Length: 96
Image (cartoon, rainbow, N blue to C red; front, top):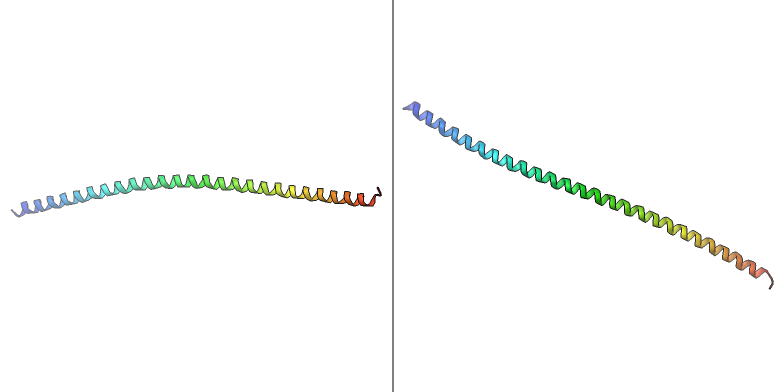
């Protein structure tokens, strides 16, 4: 009788452990699936970040190019103004 009770207790414990292991397995699979989803989100976010960085770099390059063009235009205008001043001075010196 005692042996039968021990076998029954052992079977009950084995059943409980099997149920606990099954629950752990289900939770681990859920965690692994969530981990995979999070990795995909991170991958997409990194891709978007790289794209945005490239856009910012391109815009910065455009701004530098526009600044260079503006500075070059400003220098040309100053040069033309100096030439006009020189011509005006020469015109004033030359008797009409």
